[in-house]
Length: 354
Image: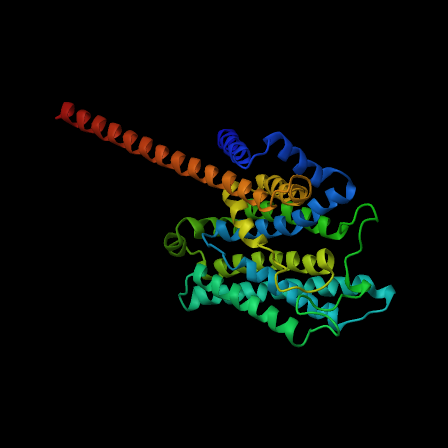
């Protein structure tokens, strides 16, 4: 894993030199933007939380052999359901924790509903999850725009967002210097530990792996592949719904149509980079979050567009995937050569015995 990282950093340095800046200077500004004080670091965590939740959910569907491209819509559906609760309920202050829990559960429900539709299209109607997921992403976006321009249009506001949520409907910050939701960090940590543990130590986890490896063989061995696939979608949708609820109930404090912010698609890249090893997921998501949070300093300090951070991330992903493909081809070639050698050895042995 070290070699592709070093090569991607070299290519990124050449890119920075091409735009007339020093790589060390760009790296310093990104570092300062992400870690210059506690509030900046909290901004990294506030992006890391939903990205990690989405990536852990995608790890489940990937294990089942499912490309859950629709996770972006599942995040948005979770945000819509949680926002509906925030705009509808107004519990007294002493019951604020109950309202917060209710909105989180609504977010979970929204993500599961949207993921369940993708699963139903896949399992019972034969619609590939990639096409079904992309269609549902677009539908969730249209739904969000309708809500902003219609039922949730704020008085005296604009079509960019709903009216701000009441304080009781928001995650309480850890402190003034650490504006990050402690409850969300706890839920993310639990998901990071519990989901891989369940998948490694339970029958359901073994069924997921069997379904992802060879669904036909798994079915012949008695694995309920349709039920397993649907459960993978629902678990991923639940985690995506929590991610979406956090975005509206803390990051923005209101509903916005673009609240998903590409987190789902970035989560797909995270799972690919982790090579299906869940221990790598929180580290990779933290690096991505730090780069994105720190890139805001590039525009202010160096007059460079903040999209340069996305280019750097894309370079890392592309180089890593190329190395993975090259390694797989080399391993396949070695396997073929080993098979030829064993076959030749068997032929010579049969000739001698003959």
